[in-house]
Amino acid sequence: MTVTTLLPELAARAEDIAHTRTLTCPCGAAGTLADRPDGTVVRHADTVAKAHAPDADAGELTRRLTISAGLPDVFLPSLGPAPVDLRGRLVTFWPYGSPVDPDDPDAAPWEAVGTLLALLHRAPVPESAPKMRGPLKAARAVAGLRAVGDHPAAAPVLRAWAALPAWARAEAPMPQPAALCHGDLHLGQLVRLPEGPWRLIDIDDLGAGVPAWDLARPAAWFACGLLSGEEWTRFLDAYRAAGGTALGPGDDPWSVLDVPARALTVQTAARTVTKAVAEGRDLDELDRAVVDACRRMAAIPGRLTHKSTK
Image 1: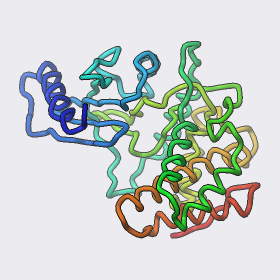
Image 2: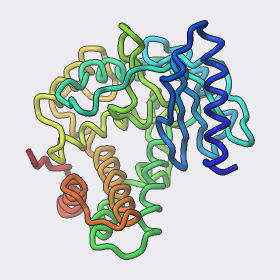
Image 3: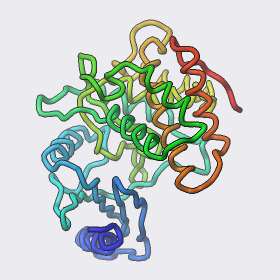
């Protein structure tokens, strides 16, 4: 089933659910929120329908829904206990929550991000929990980069990838002990209901794994100069204050964050180069920043070094 034929049916399902939730549906609040090969998301009023990736596993997705439902202080609650099938695609339904304003990055709720991650990492890991898929997503991004062929920016990205340990490249089991992890944490994964607290969304990569992975994208942004020191400190302080388990008692978080931050930097660089090639354009300033970070990583294998671009 193509995305073209999926979208109208997905929108119709969202509308049906929305109309069962309210007698006065503001039907004008509808549209496509995301339309990618790995997921299509549509909204109708206060209801969101998500068609998950074509290769999504029904059993694992159901277990992820169960885990998230048991953590209402961390995740936005779904509108059903299991996905439904829509012509071979697994679909879940959710209440609509307001996202972080992309035009006001200074208002990003870094304290809320740190607190939510700490609560998630402290939660018991069910025996049935699937694996956190962060390293697998990074490996797929690198595979996509290799598929585009020769590009001047590809070599430093691939060198940085090759220097990572096997577990970070999804080629070996992740280190133990495991914690519950989001697996794809970024500011786009936060929403809140009207007058409610921030909650995490997107459970596709949720599972048991290395908790430092969830801190790695903010760490990588800081190392690349895309996140200020003040914001980075706010995030870390909130995580530690809420009892987050990823970091040791020492003052230097990089002994724990270095490897996953490098992996997330490579993933971001691989995706930006792949996207630039697909769009037939040169790398922009942010693209070059993450590629340059990969170049520095390959030259200095011990630690991810910070360089401000601000």
